[in-house]
Length: 148
Image (cartoon, rainbow, N blue to C red; front, side, top):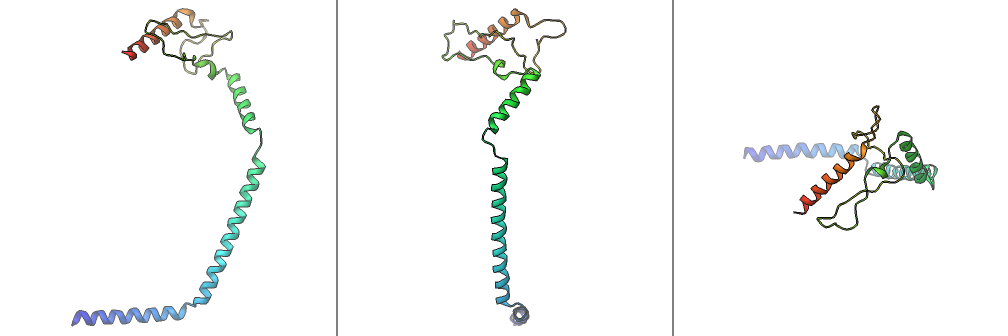
């Protein structure tokens, strides 16, 4: 009995609170406010899209990529880094175990990768031919071990 009475009194309180809230809230007024909010939100989205499109058009250039590559290559050339010469080309087919792999060098001096030992320093040594042959033979030995 006591629990039923407690539940009834709680429901009375909730009902009174809902009646007071309903009197304070004007549904047509709230609906009008929400419609105005949605309208303004759509306007803002349209303005934002137009602004983004105009910025993209203003900042977009047809040859931007070419210009960027040219500037990057110029800077790399100025500091002496050449990525195309740093790694020799691999052969198209896998050589037999007895075939020796060799890298070809062109007429330009080889670029030394950043942080690599054996660069031309104050001692005047350019890495001599012996070290290159040893490294090629070491690489060939490693490749042969991988095949096994």
